[in-house]
Length: 315
Length: 273
Image (tube, rainbow over all chains, first blue to last red; front, top):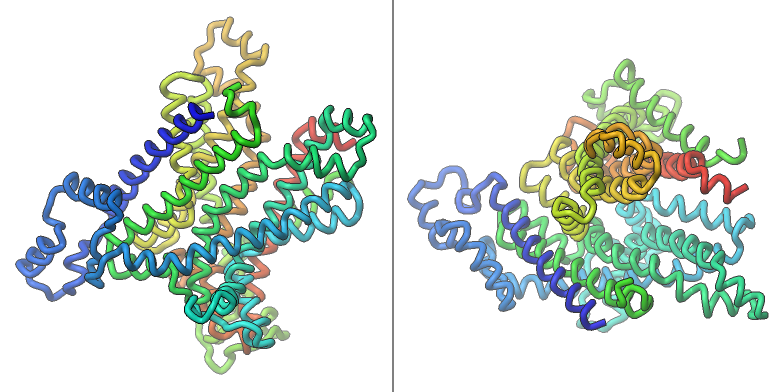
């Protein structure tokens, strides 16, 4: 197990190094100089040069890459060109919106998908199975930002149960904070729950056709007990993979959903930074998102090994 | 016939969208660049079957031209993914375990690790919003999907006797890949292509919604939804119609993908009988 974890950790580090190079290169070759952008079209060349020097943009690319990655390793993401404030503080502040939102959506989608998937698998071929699968097919096809708009019209404008946008913050208590994230989380969770239900159903159906399940049934174990004790555990591998992948989708989906609900999260920060050519903020936030996704997948891999002994023994 | 109901339903839905898009080149009910403020925000009626928007433009015409944008962006993005991903996957399978296989597959893993929409947003935002950059941004993330799918399937084909026979007859790995492996992957690629196509439609809608897809005056479904957002409480049809267009297209393609998989995969067909 330890050797497996070490190997995976090594590949995690390699992926992060490569990702940082790719992100830095993409931002580097993009047209538009931050200094000229900040000073406007009438700026004198010497003023632009002075600002470039102040921002450290006159240094070589390699030096800047090393400074950027070195800073991130120490937890220092640099200083925003536009706001002249430490990016770490900005990111931490936004994280209090984006991370709870992604986790809330992940929890919702898992809570919906597990019973739905289990139900559909246990009723395989029955009309209720077809109905559930039809609904999930529709759930996958619905763009979440559109669903968000519809939720706002129904639950915020017509019924007035929730606010139509904005974030109340965590100062007034957990309930108030969660309430303002509920509609965004539901709209993020819908397609994910649909995908997860389908994966859950097919994984369970596949496991239920295995020989050891038949053996267990032949030994007199009840259908329900087989489902819970044997099938569920073995169906967890594909389900865990999808949950891992979903985290990436949720982080990305949150960027658009934050626009719909005017949430002050990481997504809005990236958008603002892109329009203001605050490239250092863009680089750092995207790197952070990639770091989150790669790390989550790393932990999922470790969980596999814990669930399936074949993986950790490398057979 | 009943066996193929998902394929038939999906194909019908997709065909409607395709016909609407193709038809829009020849004829649309109203000119979409023509503003007519007196006719603004009409609900569906005899003159404007799907109503009008806040500038008085005919929504049916915009949906028809928007279908063109959505389909073109998603189709070209699938083209990029297939055009680059499949040869890479075939090369990786042909050189199984060798350096080239490792390089291709590790690069794939890396691209997979990126949250695709974040990078698509990054690419379109930094290099300029527009349909062309949206195609590239969505297409890049199709590459590892096709590479992985074709490598996986090609690996099992390389073990088959007919490939062994081809090798014994002295054919090079390149020729075997092109003449024997690729034709046997067609079914799989069609199914995967349909799935990626539907994902591309959703991604294009998302990018257009945040203003990074096709730029006005070119209509796109995502852009129509973004415009509708502030008016949705008093003119819900502005959001419902483009939204339904996206949902029906994606639903149609997904059903078609599922149906094709069942129809083309004899193993699945047998297990269902």
